Image (cartoon, rainbow, N blue to C red; front, side):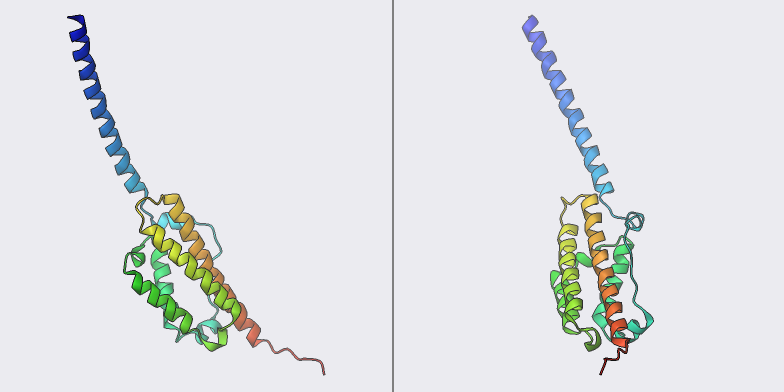
Length: 173
């Protein structure tokens, strides 16, 4: 009789404890989904130096449409909108291909090409991590920072190239 009562009580305790575990797991999953969303506030906390193009540089690249498309995508990323990466991979691939192909002659140099390659690598990494459901918020923010730093570095290098080209250096005779 005692064993029967003890068995029934054990089964009841196990059933109630399993139910609580499932409720806790569903609450934790809901909190994790909410905390994974990237907001403009999260991105504004990223510490990096954002270089803008100089006026002379903007005049020289005004016809480089792909640069401005990428700049628009970066503006959306800074607002926490990662929808650029949810589009088809073909769109991003075409943008990057045209981006490299249509570099204005005034700034086409190995240093600019290297920065574009770095930017392309960071863009692909951000695209793949933003499409994964297992990516953590901190990891995604770190990848966004790397991408923004790469774009800022490209801007700095373009400004330096234009500044160097505008210098008139007299060579000794």
